[in-house]
Image (cartoon, rainbow, N blue to C red; front, side, top):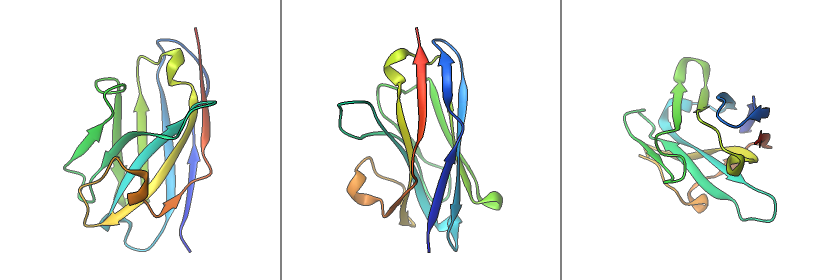
Amino acid sequence: QVQLVESGGGLVQAGDSTRLSCAVSVRTFSLYSMGWFRQAPGKDREFVAVISWHGRNTYYADSVKGRFTISRDNAKNAVFLLMNSLKPEDTAIYYCALGRTYSIGSNSAAEYDAWGQGTQVTVSS
């Protein structure tokens, strides 16, 4: 059974940095693309970042490009999201998601087959 558990986040000040982690219980984790999405109050879930199965490709939403960095550690079955220069509009619940095998990644939630429970990030001004 696939399980994803996010950690990190919490309350931070505008301009600060924080890192989210996602531990993934799945066989052959290294074969899957991994993504991060977020959902702010009253808004739809939106794509944030994705990393390909081999880690050589990353893709970001325009709103976070240059500030956020996605990475993975296949030895630990984990994916990370380093968030720098945080803004109040980054406030949301952040979800990690398991993509498809041998995929370079997608910004569509429909391309992800399992999701974590989410972790709250609140950025105060």
